[in-house]
Image (cartoon, helix red, strand yellow):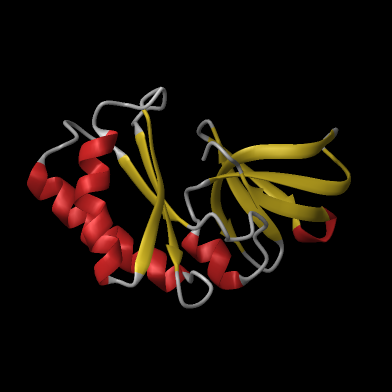
Length: 153
């Protein structure tokens, strides 16, 4: 079921996306999260959607949403592309998706587990660092098979 503010957000965000040569693909407002998460998917119609496209959209939408006061209280704004690979591989992706929910899968068990979920903190030379409900987890890079964004991040 669509949240009642979604049509207002679409009305506000669609022309902003068009001004950036982007298409608004989807808007989801997840109120079952604390704070709530507003996720807006955009697509670049001329080329692959870049992180820069998402960053530009994020800045302008955040400013306009705050001025319009459509969403009362705190919320998290996520701008993404339905075409972006859900797997994180480059340093730029690890920086851009800091704080996002991810799942890390390992080749071999680490501390008895082959799958870890949490909020991405960073990737350094030795490990991928997650925040798991306030607890810091560092998973050695040599054990990591895949790091992917969670669908409900």
